[in-house]
Image 1: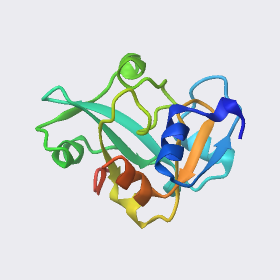
Image 2: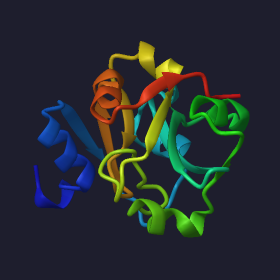
Image 3: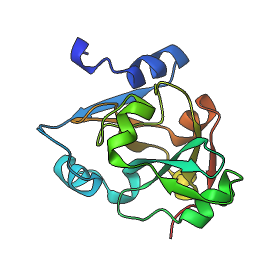
Image 4: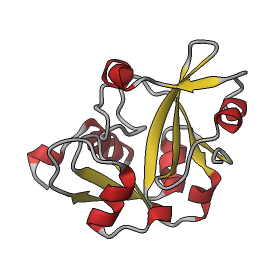
Length: 158
């Protein structure tokens, strides 16, 4: 594996002893998760996007869900014990997470935020998430990821 693929996410997985595979694609700027999945031939239901939200309390949260689905803000808020959550504005993503839009992943952020993975991920043996930079995807076990980051599975989609 080349040095250029050693993102914070990859370093975290190696430190935790979690098996993973890397897939890369050519991309100059942000493209949405559906196009990434199509470009790499990944099933949409196994390709998850990471959304970051802020609760009424001021705390930040990560939500992982299939790229073709939409986050239900009420279910998301309930899953983290908040009255409400709002998605982070694109301009704030790097400041809060350390990652850029299109490369945001729940692992290896500046600070580990409470993470909720949509319950559909619990049934998958492996899924794809961003690898911590645009052009990099990581395939790994959802169960191992949730355990390593002390996350949880819940119904969070519309």
